[in-house]
Amino acid sequence: MIRNLGTRKLSRTGSHRRAMFSNMASSLLLHEKVSTTLPKAKELRRVVERVIADAKNGRHVEVRRVIKDKAVYHKVFDVIAPRYKERPGGFTRILKLGARKGDAAEVAMVKLV
Image 1: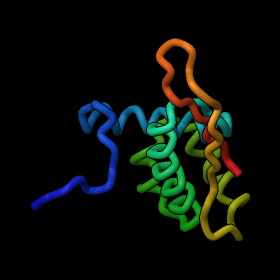
Image 2: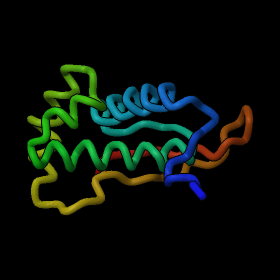
Image 3: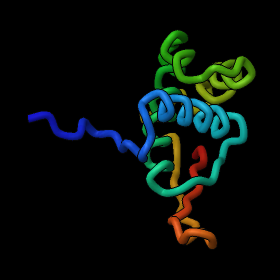
Image 4: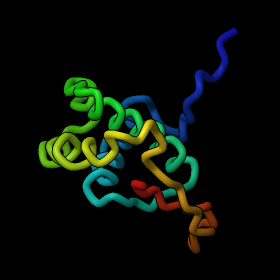
């Protein structure tokens, strides 16, 4: 029996999820922090950690599959990957900010360490 294979669906189609996390990862890598709901933050962490690890190891094609913006792509290889060259993992931190006023959704901030 096939179970959930480890990712949250977040009530979106696969293409919508990929596009959303690509955009969120680009925003996080460009501004170095982003605020979102807690489940999205936990999934975003998986995407960004893999992008930074791939950039550290010189895997340009794998990074390009996620990061579409050229400015962010160059920032990843020129600024972010050298910064974390000695760090084995754990490039992001999630800080809980509390409940959102409109719908009481748990909000969190994802930032680069």
